[in-house]
Length: 145
Image (cartoon, rainbow, N blue to C red):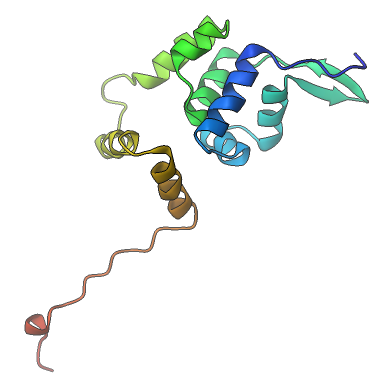
């Protein structure tokens, strides 16, 4: 194919969700567990091989992880014609009992209450490393030497 194909509806959805939530493609790809190059192929709807455009359709599980990373919902995926990926996203959202870390779940729930700007700030700080909280002794706690 010599002309660039239009992105499929699910690709446009993922791109719009990432933009709406101010998540870069690089960060979203990392969160989804795929490479930047694969992310770009899926959101543009094609890859190039020898100067030829080849349409790309993401597997349901990959698309679900991308939607989760970008902040798209299962309902939006279904509306875009990818009920298979919507089902996969629903499964991702409901981890089986015993496989979920309570601390991770608590932090995830807390993050969900923050605005997209605040979430991005938290992610930015995490990406640059979290400084450990140091305990400083109050003057009355110091020991004589």
